[in-house]
Length: 399
Image (cartoon, rainbow, N blue to C red):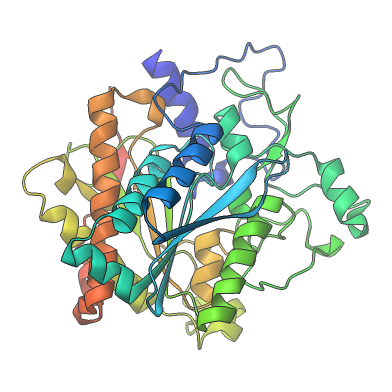
């Protein structure tokens, strides 16, 4: 069972590797006769449990945490945002944009609870210096189905955007069937290809089907909701200083070693608009700040290295030289946010509770490293060139 789960989730769950699918997502491991095998997700947070947990956190925080419904998924589930802190530096964190990447949601709930309820000097400083907005389980429909994509048909998109009648479906539209997912009977989109650096973009037929190196369209309600939260924070504070996105990846080793990666980081998702390679993003040259993104990644890496000689030190740099403006990270980085990708190893169903606890702790340690360094302003003293000293991710784990 472990090998089956691992193979399936490696094929579909790597954040930035969806380009291995066809432009329409239909030819990847297709078998109409396949019997779909749903791995167990017991021990992880359901949407109902998320709702109860957030309300409990809000009640026990004595006013420190405010929970609101930011929007709704295509199937009508609430997308929540939890806000803690009153500082003028803004951090937006989301989890489960891919519904089968679940460790980040558990970590994010614990972080919000701890910051909201703990009155230690460090936690009070976080609340005083930062405004932290969390969107846990943003793709709740995908989470309930334990799959990467949301649940939405192209026909529903056209009904909401009639100007797209006759356009080809977007390249990130999944309709395939394999032994793990049945998108034929319940199609969906990779929501993390539905963002656009133009936050006011309205879908146009000529922009479809698109590709991984082109912006998305904000056709899914999940992406629209996150975009709207981002814009509201921009309006309130002037900018969103930091955006953190919590993901999973396959099982890899650190380059030139046989050491399994615990977590990969990255802060580069599009070419620099001030370079020839990034010329198509020239209008964002004044807002894009890749050096700050690198400093944030160094803060996370340093915090994890301080855990000592343990799996928490097995941190790598995710694949670089990417051009992914349709991701939330790429879109928000171009809009001036320092951006950080967390990619924990494997998938939630691949490991026992001890391993999952380690992965959750790794995510929390890295996120807290960013938050504390931002609240003390130590992050601005870090050398962005140290980002390039983080060891690269190597090949897949060989079993």
